[in-house]
Amino acid sequence: MAELEPPTESHETALAPRELPGPPVARGGSLLGAARGMLRDPIAFILQATREHGPLVRIPLGPRTLTVIAHPDDLQQVLQQGFGTYERGRVVDVMRLVMGNALPMSDGEVWRRKRRIMQPAFNRSRLKHLVHKMAAVTARYVERFDEGEQLDASDLMMRLTRDVIVETMFSGELGEDTAELDKALADLEHYVARYAFVPFLVPLWLPTPDNRTLRAALATLHELIDGLVAARRASGERHEDLLDALLDARDEESGEPMPADEIRDELITIFFAGHETTANALTWTTYLLSTHPEELARVRDEVDRVLGDRAPTAADVEQLGYTTAVLRESMRLYPPGWVFGRVAARDDVLRGHQIRKGDLLAIVPLVTHRMAEHWPEPERFDPERFVGDRGGHRDFTYVPFGCGPHMCIGTHFATMEAVVVLAMIARRGQLVVERPHEVRMKSTVTLHVDGGLPVRFEGRDGGAQ
Image (cartoon, rainbow, N blue to C red):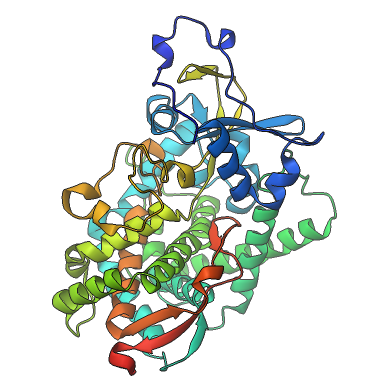
């Protein structure tokens, strides 16, 4: 990685932003700049660009440019100190087609109002009552494992976390037939992954095959969600799940509930983004534990000591410190949200380089988390980095859920869920990766294992438990 320049904040810079040089520019290689390379393999292209130019680099995409930022000082300025200078804006236009104007898509006063209304639904005191549902869903999967059974861990974790969302959000009212839901979510993921790095938004009214598929998937989800919400309201029943929490939510200033279309947008966002990020974190952790037997043994020892043969509770999750450290180290090496975007609302300066109003920014935790300046031996899997007091990393060197005011509202939910799943699988046995040397990263909406992760189940002591 190129040598880093000393941090230079904009208010300390004597020159106006427009008088300063811009970030170094990655080589494009064609009239379309780097668009072809970014569409083919954005992970490889961005990693190569940052190796050559450092953690602040511009990537030409035809008529537009994308500014990659990964240095912790720049992340702090963009995500915290420059709150209001950098917005989600049009960089999330493709995602907004799916999520509407949900919390992760909002800015300014709209975001503040939504965050204020939704925060109580995701408080730790409320979420701890959902751990038994997470454990019950996980048990249904884990107890069915047969000795020597071959599985795709990616598919397994997607189905498991989908069912956790169904149970914790709707208390199972969706039923067991999720084929329509699965197809709609897969179609939406395909669309977003395909167009995320296209430098212009394809109008939805164009009758392209992709647009027709997108509209059909959205219609399926809208009908499904609207029906579930209407049925819950009509029944008057309470389940103390996430749907109840959103229906109960009130703006503390106005006393108004969330409008129906906003509730639908938030529920779709939880479905679409919530289960996939956790599933990918679990898939990558499965890979790492399979290839690091000493760390797996420590997880098992901790699980045996804390849980015994009981189902985990919220209090138990707090005691599974090493298992949590394993998860955090996995998300350092393979952050599910490996990239997310912002747009500059006004001119600014990042460490002596000009950022112009309207510039599109790609914040890349995948690069931040592998900077040797902040993470000794960054490619090595070492959960000890997150054990005890070292587990915080609030200094913008570790941002798997974002950071600053816009930090993901579902961070605690996702962490609890993943720790429960890891603990219950480790207690029963191990998912052994069949061909670890073939594992590669792939960018879709999140960071996937390319081609899935074939595994074989082995029970404790070589037999099913």
